[in-house]
Length: 455
View 1 (cartoon, rainbow, N blue to C red):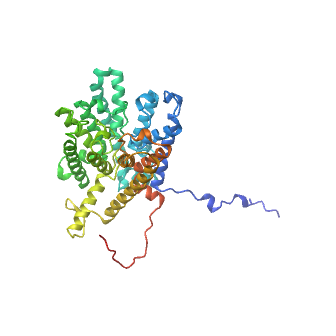
View 2 (spheres, rainbow, N blue to C red):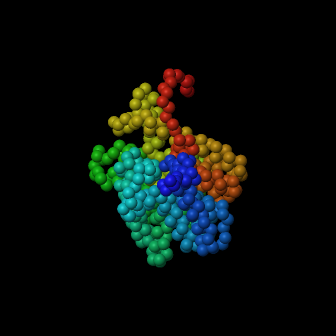
View 3 (tube, helix red, strand yellow):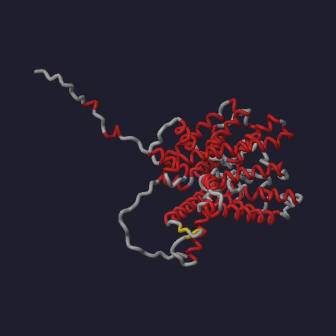
């Protein structure tokens, strides 16, 4: 009797390799997302409508990378080389890169009623630097809300400042562009001398510095400040970031004023009011802002070395700033103090810092210093420039600051490509990149202790 039951077709069998889905780690997804955004920006900037005259692919890629990574290093003058459309594209890239594409993705998903899966939450947790998955959606919405509110205030104030000089329409556009660039710590300017012509302008200095300081202290700090009105109710992280920001900015201000007061090419030729404004601006802008009201190539070597340190430190976590971050810097200082005092635990404000955080801070600084050393070595070979110029460019790119002593526009093609890599690395974070290259695996075996001579 004929068997009418359906027969299983051999060729329909799914092979295990065919059904296995490709799983990417959160750092890998973030890296690919930023790279995709850079490539989209590059293609948009290559359009004839974006520039007054054709530019090379490398120039478009460099500009797009600098915008997405909110660095501010430029090989082309933004105001004269790019059309209004091109400048608007740069502003959008800055906004997307500064706030993070994951923030927009999370808020959009929530608005559409889409349930965020566990894997997406893990990616968002990595992007927003949160330790709790439950806080991811709430943090993403708060980031977007604070960003829009603060940027609207910045646009309003800068429009009022520039209205008498440029007229309403042009003042509004300049207010929009500089607010986006300042709040996201990008440092892109519409003038080829950045903000040097406004060195003595009090409103411009105060608004711009307020924008990038607020953007650089971190959204977690802003959220905590809104929830708690009293100092001792704030989290330890918030208090540490606020105190460290105040101390570092104040010390940097007095040091730069002292070092440049007798320099005729910088503060020495200015009245006292302009000296105060310029010293303040140069003290706070290296924390990844990228604007400048003084020419760094004319500043003393001591001021430039101080700027290198400030750029390397950077701003707060979950902010538009980069660098090793303030929290990392404070943990390393306290870990050193703990060792010198022969104590077993690292404590900050009567709270114990986990051993894993100390190791993470050490790893981040070591990897960052490795990038700085290797990149400085390579750039010293490819470029005909002084060691200070090269080191300044490398740290500025890796910390996504955007300050330069004039080397950026003179970089060779290999030099531009290296700076592109550094900007992407700095924005993603050296530690995140290390996780992407080699996912850590915990060992189940515990070995006997040994001692290696140190010092």
